[in-house]
Image 1 (cartoon, rainbow, N blue to C red):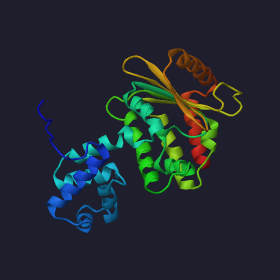
Image 2: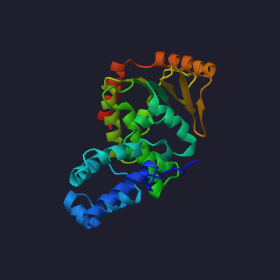
Image 3: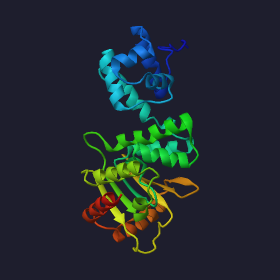
Image 4: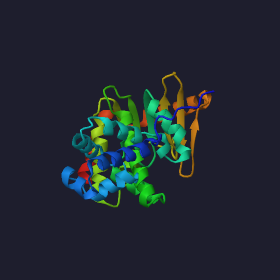
Length: 274
């Protein structure tokens, strides 16, 4: 059997490949990090972190680099592959994240925190730090969570129905400005055509999801799977009978919630009070 031809020695992992390409392009131009910072307008430390793989940066800086290097779309494409790569998530979440990226419709109930798909970077950072993450690992996991937004973007994004316990809207962050940004994000989401948002107000009574976050994903093959999570563990559920039971419980909770119009007003009122 002929020996397999190795086309390139570059990294096959999206995050590593993105960092390698950044280093290659700068090296070919004979630029230092300081030179690049002067040309493009971002701090040299930002480019250092991106080239070492410690951070991916945001779309604005990546677009600016594409324009500067004359590589239209190349770096943005590599960045998108890196930011949506399931391998950047902790191992116990990777299976779910792969399915989430393929979902044709999604719906969720959140007990105490906004859905990850609707979290701001500030909220994600405080939430993940509260879970014990810090340093580069914290930065990477914040980027990974915010990168999930691409699921709800594009020309034909999937529908997403969200039920939020009122607790989500009352459990504020330590930094008031960051909390306002999170409430603004939820208010913006409430008027997006592919997102339907309901608030479950205090006083709605006890129900089957009192202490459980649940996300449903309908996949291209017609299957629906569920991911359930509480304070100590999470589980991906694929058994149709179990998924059906959770769906019935979810529907019962939705019947207790405010309408989308009432929910939008509720979120706006919370924003005024923040």
